[in-house]
Length: 501
Ligand code: NAD
Image (cartoon, rainbow, N blue to C red; front, side):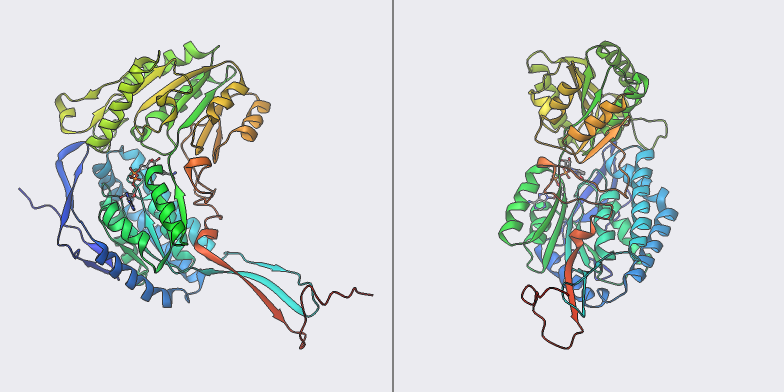
């Protein structure tokens, strides 16, 4: 049998072995016989080495003009375009989502590269009138230093690019720890940085577990920004630690996203949206639709259409272009989903409409496949209506009015994405105003964010920061207010207040 490819950490522009000498296997969740490679099981010492190289690189990188840094990101975007198919193929093998979606994941990285490169010529500060004569006032953005990034497995390219590109555009240097289930995609991203001649040490990658590498990043005194995307459970721990160390932290956490379907909606469109939102990426998106809140007048029709189509979805290896839903990312994730299906069946009067089982026969025996699952007659307080499942399970809740729909939608600890299908513009705007979420779609599913807008959520979905758009630059820079007094005398603000004339 051919030896598995051994990947290394990327530190100071070089591919280096982990100090532990240990590696962990990464296998295809659609076909566990397919070994993607072996990846470093690194330790705190490797993080220290990466942070040191990032600190050294920062001394020069911060002085490179932002438009020049932007031009390098343009190059990164062009290389991603050229390597898009190769990266998408590897990503599908690595985490299972279908090839159309992994192409989309890389495309999001390309969009982010091009969008961010343009920001190199903006990175706006402000000029403001000073209150004293012969005095000039302005604010400028300054880089913050070394940033640590900890990323999940469900968007192995898009999420790292959302973090790394704006951080380096601002003049910072970075150390990224990819999810243990998807290091290969991030390793290819490091190759892209290398090919684009991003200077050594500006971006570093250390692979390994959350407890060893993630922890070490969070605790390292030279890192003063941590950008984390992942579960609420881990995010909460990091918030405690970063709070104690006065370290700035951006959290993008879970969701329990809902789509409302009102009785005046285009039902065909609403069903198509719900299928894509609930079962795309096997339901493993932070923005996945996991609750469908349907008006009682159209409930039966919507449910019948949905169940019929969900039952027909083609499940299999995502490299096959005709497959519509891939496997769960791991056996552990599949078991979590099956446990929620068990809870759903046991819960008071929830009705299993379709799916509900693992797929284990024939071709499916090689991977972590499951059926798309729909529960009807779900009550808002049930666990399957409250907790993030992160799998292909949709809970249908019936409502009688828009007010009730919005109340049910808001009744969770999360607030990431939301959607409403209606033809009534008044209802649409009421929903925009009253829904508690970072993202609201009108007549579109809960998934499909674009990189030029802020991305993130309210309540336990995060801690108030946003990724993407222009707002992300507030996280990766510090404001400096600058006053230039050209009066040639001591002028005292708030004290020299004689009125004019
Ligand atoms: P996770 O929290 O288990 O892991 C995320 C990352 O944190 C991984 O790299 C992991 O190795 C690391 N980690 C784990 N323990 C750590 C520790 N003690 N210290 C430091 N790092 C640690 O999440 P996951 O299973 O990879 O991803 C799924 C979760 O991510 C879901 O809850 C999903 O909603 C969320 N997510 C959110 C968004 C968003 O933008 N809001 C996007 C994608 C995924």
